[in-house]
Image 1 (cartoon, rainbow, N blue to C red):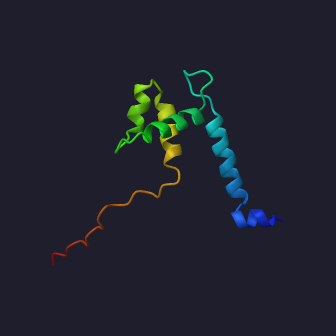
Image 2 (image 1 turned 135 degrees about the vertical axis):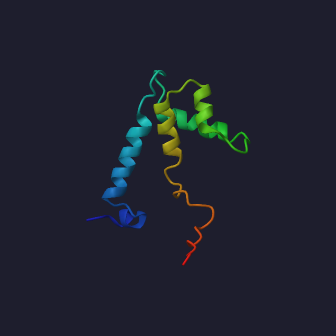
Image 3 (image 1 turned 30 degrees about the vertical axis):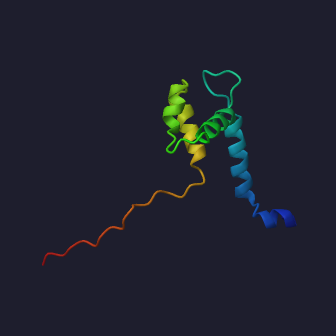
Length: 99
């Protein structure tokens, strides 16, 4: 049975599993950077992106710092996890009928 706090937070088994997975991801060590975790890289990216750059290019920023494609994919995926899926800018026009 869920506690009142878990019910209020919407804390169900799936939510707990997601949080555990996210914690494991963030605690993972970054290849070629001993002692640096994914959480450290995410924090670095967030700090750099808050320096006023209008369009911050996360992949390019990480490439310039020597990170592998695996690390870049992991960090970008983490940063985009709560964003809604992209939709077309304009709805598709109905197909024209040529009878």
